[in-house]
Image (tube, rainbow over all chains, first blue to last red; front, side, top):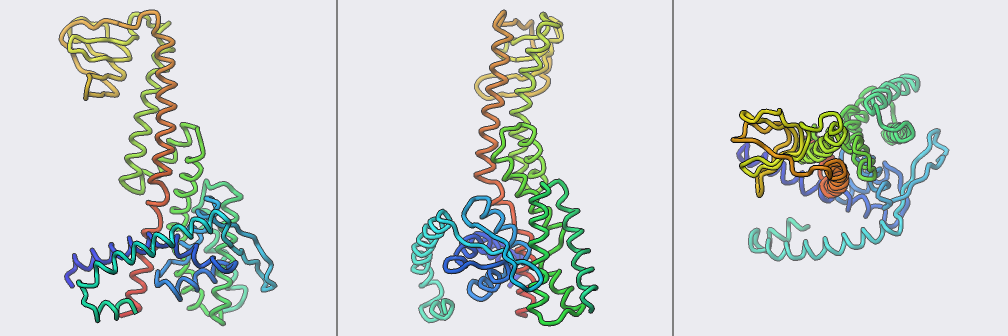
Length: 127
Length: 239
């Protein structure tokens, strides 16, 4: 791949991932209350977002300012407290809306992309 | 590495972060620093051993404290500004935002122009009793309307203030020489009219700036740098 094409794909991927960060962070909190490192582990394991660690706390503080998540310091008995986050009712509604949009959007895009990569390769990429 | 050394390295990192967070409100700053402290200790614990290599790796993964603080400050400032009605807060926030990219620069330019126009209106209202013959709403022969100061010359006329020539031209500053005398058209209504104009400029600029921040503010501007770094790191490790 040429340098400019490589630069473009890096930028494009970064934009796509950046746009999904909030959705992924909210989704990681759907079932459980989690603290920062647990959220990171959930994102690393499931989303492939490659989030820089300090950035997570910027996103969480923004989500909290928008009243989409709530937080509480808990003394976990490990010598230092942990700050646990959970979704508020507004956060659940927002996540539900985002998830619905994402499913519809990706289904439309999938249908468009199938002929581009061919059925086999497309199935492989999706896996 | 001993527990004391780990604590010392972490404290050093957090002191840099605290310093870089600068003018963020103390409670908010302490919260952020404590959260990062907790994260660092969790990560070191998860690694199982506190060697120098591990602590360096953890601190690198958390990110450069100056970049982290810089992003946090812009976000915190814009979040505060979106709730504020103070022209000073909005100007200061958009100025900081302007240093991060073109969208911020546009926001600052619009805010500065709007409040600049309001300042001209109030200045004119204040100066009218002192310089009644020189301050006014002036109409030139070319149909340019200027609110501000007239230099008093009938030839080589210059006016300083806000100039509008319908439908397209707008100048905040000096309007160069016009062909012929200007005449004042507001008369006794000048004071209330310029006062109201100033108020209108402040209200519209405040409303617009807050809307602009909410629409294009922190959501669009942040995380690009740290995310890019993490991407290049992950693509490096894949190779």
